Length: 214
Image 1 (tube, rainbow, N blue to C red):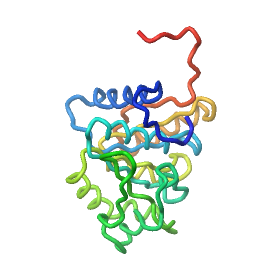
Image 2 (image 1 turned 180 degrees about the vertical axis):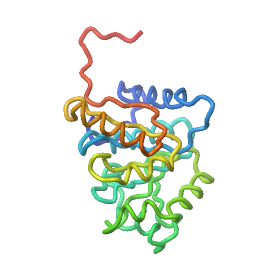
Image 3 (image 1 turned 30 degrees about the horizontal axis):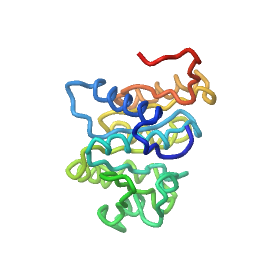
Image 4 (image 1 turned 180 degrees about the horizontal axis):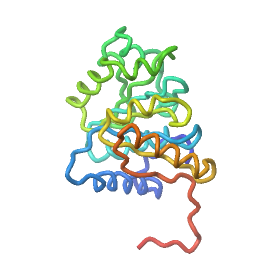
């Protein structure tokens, strides 16, 4: 999928994201899912686009949603939502700003974001800090759904740290890009981190011409 928001609720892609939203709920029927980590095995698989559009479909049903750009190495969320990235998560985690002052509204009603902020030299240390835990606790009080756009699993350890801070993790897999062995390594990494893996989103799947909705 291209790096763009799917705001047309009648489009096929929008329907696919609503299906993902429904499947997330069914994945843990006895547990309320308030925080989601979205990651991938390697860069370029579309995890940021999926995180953004999941936020859109949750907001479209009236949920208060916030997306955090926790990829403090190659942030893209501010580009997707056409916002600025002067202040953000890194400022909160270094205690330069309070989180209320870095939240940005988007063009989608009920959907806000926290951009990455200035790129720090030590993202792992910041994400594993007590301040990150406190931020998550505060956001759970103010929002119905927290979505974290995290770095690829096989590149850095950031997502490992974040995965067990969330109620569930979604692994985005680009069918044209990633190798099976890398997906298996990514899954093993999440399992070792005691992450609650909700499932996989397949990106760039080729739909056969004789496919019909049933």
